[in-house]
Image 1: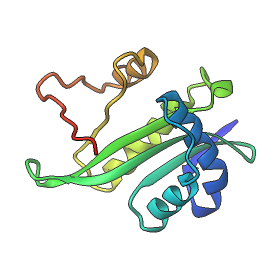
Image 2 (image 1 turned 60 degrees about the vertical axis):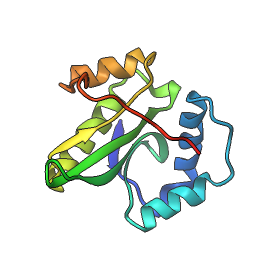
Image 3 (image 1 turned 180 degrees about the vertical axis):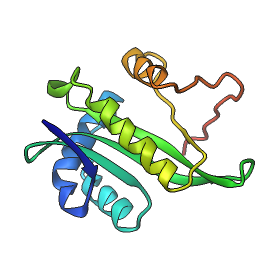
Length: 146
């Protein structure tokens, strides 16, 4: 049975393996800085990470970045990453990770969670829409990449 819990520094080694698999899904080259990146985010309380654990093995994660909205004059969360190892998919683990994430955001006083996903990632889109998330057709996204 899979258990969802908040990640700690002691999870970084296993978590970094999952993060690298997630990054690979988005065609990113492996990076030796993954563990340090995660250590920095967790130790500085810059992100909230939930992990799915099967026994002593991490099999999925969701990572959020709390931030703020001037328009709402309130806290909002960016659900930046959701990933489940391919061998553990179709077991509702991503759904469980999202449930925990949504509850934590509400408990923290956030008024909204937002995310973005690849246009062709139909399974993720079905998950989000099935949970009541609404596709944003009002705002356009722009990026400036350095």
